[in-house]
Length: 233
Ligand SMILES: *Cc1c(COP(=O)(O)O)cnc(C)c1O
Image (cartoon, rainbow, N blue to C red; front, side, top):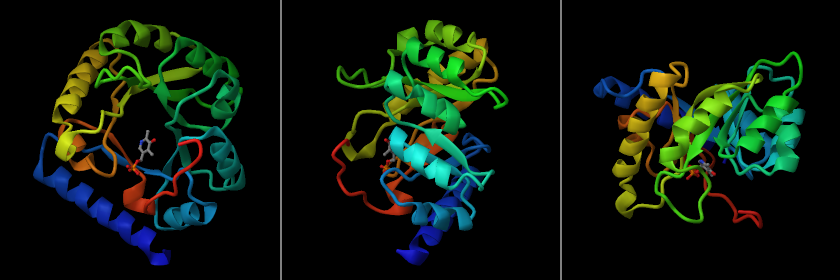
């Protein structure tokens, strides 16, 4: 797998640059988050050495272990993108720079209260259940603005934008969900101009997500290869 990670990163960044150049509506500040969940530290280091600085993790214990071990890489930034249980917020508040999966006020309040003194505000994205799936995380689109106002009022959080994981779509065509997120993001920024981040697009649909204004694409398989099924996945 050695050279593969650098090559896959290079290829993804090359495609990203091309898409930005060809399509003026794609956000120039769009960035790639390398989703390293279930992958060992050695592969994260490999990606780091290839220039990658933003990493995404889904499981709190993995975040704690990896962030602790790589603490000397001070320009490496951790994005927590998984479901959050309230007894795990302290570790997330300590190790993450960004949290993409905020969908309960209680969790947001705990993260704000537990953000260690001296650290910058934790940047948070509100997760939206954009495909309106009964079993899925995220809050309903209609509730995003009132919820955002409550999150924005918390002292140690910075409301940075929105995140979504659309339901699996035929032919990976998520245009409807992505368009709805783009519209919601525009609405949110009318109230909170700094909340410009739009986290959407994964290995199978990131090119499309970019054309709907994604600013953070979250790539796991495309960078690190297929994952072993996890007991908790
Ligand atoms: C696992 C995961 C990803 C990466 O998925 P790939 O399809 O492997 O790119 C992105 N976002 C979230 C929230 C995830 O859980």
